[in-house]
Image (cartoon, rainbow, N blue to C red; front, side, top):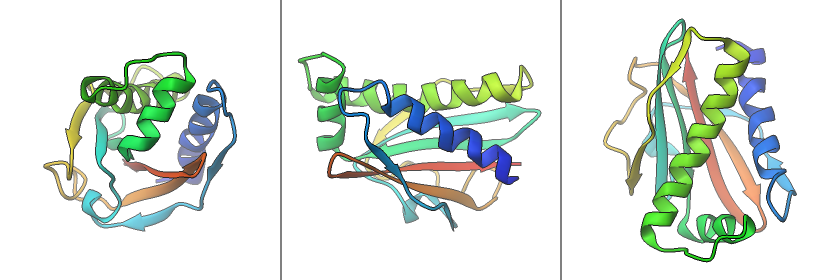
Length: 148
């Protein structure tokens, strides 16, 4: 994956958290992992990518981060279904922003949301995944991307 492609996702995560009540997000240095199991949290929203590019994009976060994210946008319901919606929505927004940059040949699926380890190990095409650590408030999350 090219560095400029990775930068699209980095900028997208900063932009996303910029719309919360606490816009201070720290994006760490991307590193390579072999499977999603190497960098995931309690909830994961995964988007499959097809068309001109192939791969996956996922956002994985602990429940506490998702609860605070929901509250930061003015919602009061922090139930399990709302946390599942939130993690899927983050993955969807990040992939959707990338689609704006990459064009209509960048097709994204609906989010697949899981609690616990997602049922796919390696990226769907066997490529390694860039894991990008994210810190928001005092919580840690991961943005994972594999594109080719």
